[in-house]
Image 1: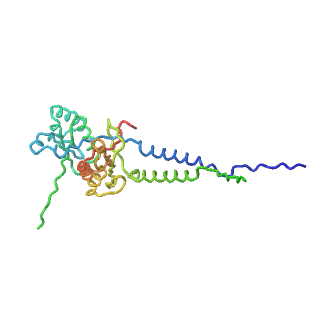
Image 2: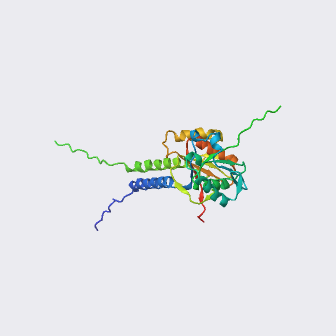
Image 3: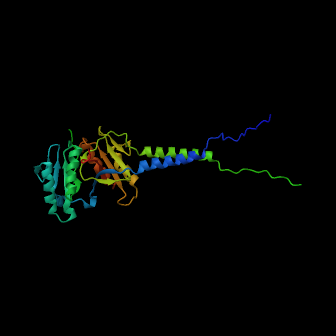
Length: 142
Length: 135
C-alpha cells in the first residue's frame, strides 16, 4: 500500500498585518470623535480696556441691573419680555458703537440662567455688555 | 567550483506595526482625556438663537457646587487669567475662543469674576448653552 504524504503547509501564525490596519482605523475614529464635536452657545463680545467708557460716558450708556426677581433698565423695573422690547428701543437710538455699550450690574445672588437670558436680549438688540462688578471695600476695624 | 549563494528572504516585520499603532492609539486617547471635562457635574442654561462653535482653545467650567475648572482640572480664580493667557499665547484674534460652561443655578458671585478673568486674558468668550427649542 502506498503512503500518501500529507502536506504540512498550513499557516500557524495569526495574520499580524491586519492588526495595524484595525488600530489605525481606531485612531482615526477616536480623533474624529474628540475633535469634531461642536458646542451650541452664545458668543459674548467683551469690550477691551481701552474701549471702556469713562465715567462721563458711562452715565450716558444704558444701565441694566439684574437680580433674582427683576431686570431694571435705567431705573425702571421690567418683566423679561418688556425688557426685550425696551432695550431694543433704547439701543436703536444709539448710532455709535461706544454708545451701544450696556453697563450690567448684577446682584450677587443672581442665577446664571436669568443673567444669560438678559444678556441674550441685550445682544439681540445689538448691545455690547460691560460688567460692573461690586467694588471691594476695605473696612478699618479699630 | 561554484559555491551556491544562500538565499535570504527579506520581509518587512509586520508584527511591530500593530504594536506601534496601539501605542499611538493609547497616546491619542490619553491626550484626549487630558482636555476632557465630561466628568464635571453641570446643567446648562437654556436660550434661543444659539451660535455654534468648535475648536476652542480652552474650556472653563463652574459646576453645581460652584467649583471652577480649566480644561477639566480644578483651578483657583486667581490663577485663571494667567493660565488662560498662557494657553492662548500669541493666537490671532478669532482663534482665541474660550468656552464657558456655567451651571444654570450658579450665582453672579461665581460667574462674573470668571467672565472678567477671560476678558483680562484676551479670550473670545462663548457661553455654552442648551437650545431652548430642543426637547
